[in-house]
Image (cartoon, rainbow, N blue to C red):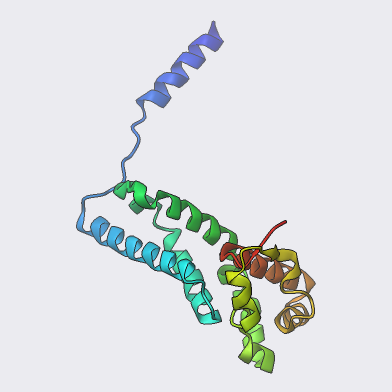
Length: 184
């Protein structure tokens, strides 16, 4: 009997709680919605045109930081036209936010070393990489960014093997997200 009373009381508490609706009408909320929509459209365009240089990839990842804070705004908009894009970019951003957050200290070390590899490194701009983007039959992502890649080597040397392996994994995730390769 006590269990039934407890269970019934729990349901009343849960049902009695009001679900707080997001602020969708204030001036700040509208500005945020516009900003979040602009970010999403920019990210869609970047992935549709297949980023061909490191700067575009970096800008995409920086957009990810803002995009991941837009959940409430997208709830307000309830726009089914972009729901699949929101889901896809959320997955890409969540998987790759490491490069921005966890890798900052390591990047500072690499920047300070100022090596030729660091100065010239652009993992997605070679003609070979661009040719891979347009191929219908994609290669296995595990064949990309091997340990002989100069930036992978330098990352392992300056930041440790664990950080180097993680950076390698994230580059492969980016390559997969931008349909350069596929996990087979």
